[in-house]
Image 1 (cartoon, rainbow, N blue to C red):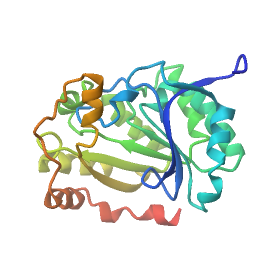
Image 2: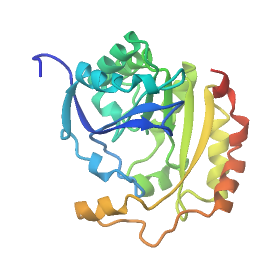
Image 3: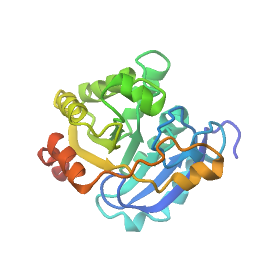
Length: 254
């Protein structure tokens, strides 16, 4: 590593991601997250300050090896963990990616967001180099959000409002979890909140799945959703209808 360069802590990468933004994407999973989502399928990303170390140049060089597969719509997505916990590195990385003409997408739950300094100025700077935000709203009800993640959602919803204020294109993502978020009253409230935003290009319902349970077992952590099965197709379609996902098609023309 070169002295003085910003260092990112990375859990893993995916060369041909197809569900984390438009087109084919190089997906980077950062290390570190303060949320403790009961349905998390990457608990191995929680510990802050661990993972493989990269400079922005090193990570960008790795991504660009796959650039020929991206086509016109693809690019780079930085996910997590929670990327906003590594703000200085992320700004450096996205700035270099944009200088190389690459489409940049940030996948965030928004928990680190605050309008206080120094975070807010850094976040404003980051948005200059961010083309799209995949914004995860875990639960619309703050008390239930705390049950599901151990944190409330007040500042998360404020981040959504700020992204709307600056007209930053956003895809809203919502994990549908039986006995947690899969209740019509919460889906109707989430729909009403999304309708107050002016920047939403897409709304996605992501059905809860159990594919990450083996990671919890490997880490010796009790899995909190034992016995809860993924939602039925009927409940997924119900959520899609209540959230009016078909109304958000603007992203196809961007």
